[in-house]
Amino acid sequence: MRLRASPENHVSSGPAVNRRTLCLSLGGLVAVLVLPRPVAAATTAPPLMLATDFRKDLPLADYWVSEKYDGVRGYWDGQRLVTRAGNPIAAPAWFTAGWPATPLDGELWAGRGQFSQAVSVVRQQGADDAAWKTLRFMVFDVPAHGGPFSERITALQAAVARIGQPWVQAVAQSRGTTGHALQERLATTVQSGGEGLMLHHGAARYAAQRSQDLRKLKPFDDAEARVVGHVAGRGKHAGRLGALWVEIPAQEGQAPRRFKLGTGLSDAQRDNPPPAGTWVTYRYRGQTDSGLPRFASFLRVASDRAL
Image (cartoon, rainbow, N blue to C red):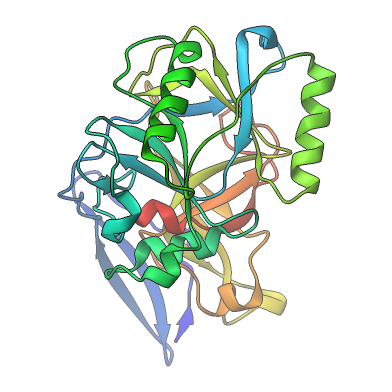
């Protein structure tokens, strides 16, 4: 099977139909696949506070700084552990034994550079004790507390101490200082295999939304987009994937936006590209005037997004 681009080199969907089309060349014949729109999950996503990107003009003295853990977001709702999409996580009973009847927000983390391991464990339908012993639950918030973050830190530490399990840890927080010191800490964290830093405004209350009081700082910008189609390769990539057509989700006051993502893909990914509907993570450097990412490069399949 060889991929063949449509005349516009993209997958299109008319406004009157709820479908997407993909042109394929099968032994010289052109076929059109009609792909249904992804069906919304039946689960209810937990009310999470989500981060926005770091800005250089932030008053750093007002923020707490911690490491950004590259794992799977886990939300303890007081009775069970769920993913950010609201799907139950099949953790062993011993892993959550003695956890409080109030929510905990954190990251299921297998260590620096072990994102794939964390995703693999969380994906399992059965509770594998040996696999779960490789994970830690890094708790960074207590959503139901109601007070400002500076007070929630103390409550969080007390909750983790009452649990008394070595695999449940309170994320270490320290006060922000100068921009230079922050960049030095970022460099040290990344050189040690960390992903980046998080900054949380001390006066902010927990809000179930993308919040400007919670910031992420990495050595590069990254974001997620959904694959909506494939662009056939040319030249050395003839007969396989040239680029992914991806869609950035609609933001407030904006329609979804699409662009081609071809840089950063491995030979294996070009031979077996992520199918339509897959979420992928890409890195970029700034945005164009139209809001599209500059110098976008494929980073990985956003495996935790599908959990």
